[in-house]
Image 1 (cartoon, rainbow, N blue to C red):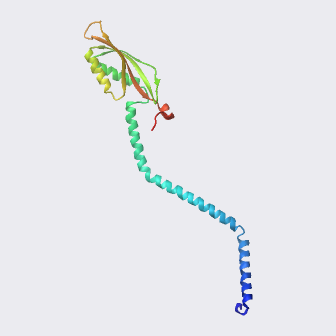
Image 2: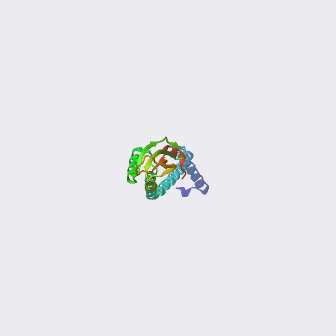
Image 3: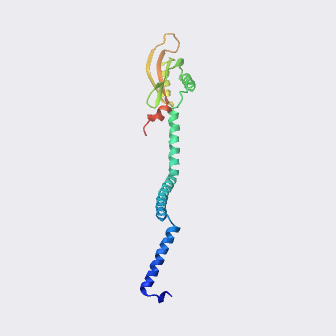
Length: 193
């Protein structure tokens, strides 16, 4: 039937059908350009999500390495806390000093803890001490103090003759300063990485 129409009629018929298809599409899909914008927005969002997923996968692959590093840092922190505990531990320190003076044949006359003095990421904890004994025994005591697991600085050392008699020939006074880790100062940026 279309073949019976002249060429201009066939062209007119096809043009009319094309216009009708466009009009039907326009009424069936009225917001086609809006839908196209939504599709573009969804494609961008999908691309962003894919990028984030790739980042997450890269981080996930490094997770065992991070866990090993955290475990290593926790071990190091444990070692540091042995040297630099977060509490003064005065009782333990007194027992250790008393035991050490006894082993060194010294008589502990006084053990007077001072006030905490803040520093960068730690606090200084001075303890004034007086002992009586022999000069050689004082040297042994100081040597043993130097080998303690915590850091202890000895300063203001005075030695005088003990006139009370007996085999304890000297009196010695000194300040033993130990150090306490200050978590609050460290948390505020006290230690650089």
